[in-house]
Structure formats: C-alpha cells, structure tokens
Length: 94
Image (cartoon, rainbow, N blue to C red):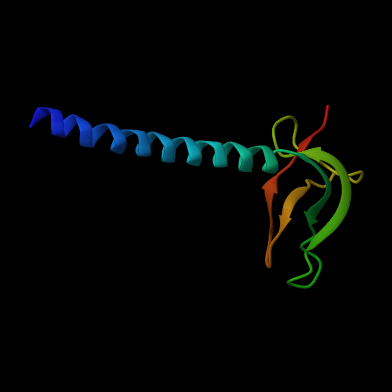
C-alpha cells in the first residue's frame, strides 16, 4: 500500500512543480515586458473637456523607479490614458 501511494504521488508532484515553474516563467516574462522605457506619456489638464483631459507628450521616462517623471512644463506625466484620468506612475531616466 505504501509503495502504491509513493508511486502515485511522485508523478503528481512532478506535474505540480512543472505547472508552478511555467507560471513563474510567464510572470517573469510579463514583468520584463512591462518594465521598459516609455517615450510617450500623458499629463492631466483639468481645463479641457471631459474625455480629453489626458494630453499626450513625448518623454524619456521608465516605469521601474526613480524621481517622478515630468514634461518640459513641469507637468507630472502618467503612463496610461483612461477615459476620465491618467494613471500609472512614470519615473525619470537617469
């Protein structure tokens, strides 16, 4: 009985470890893809009509770390353009 239990658990353990390794590899690839230089960002302009308040600007920023990214006019620059707001912090390349 003990021998049969061991024979059944070993392949199951191998499959579980294989699936965990696959998920880990995929997560690392997605993280590497997301952590990159950003050349276009958005700043929020509340004086514009709703839906057009995120204004696109060219920047030299990244989404990893550093001081908060700003454009030439000292506007804080965000990574994503949403319907009502800009989101996703960007950081200055050093």
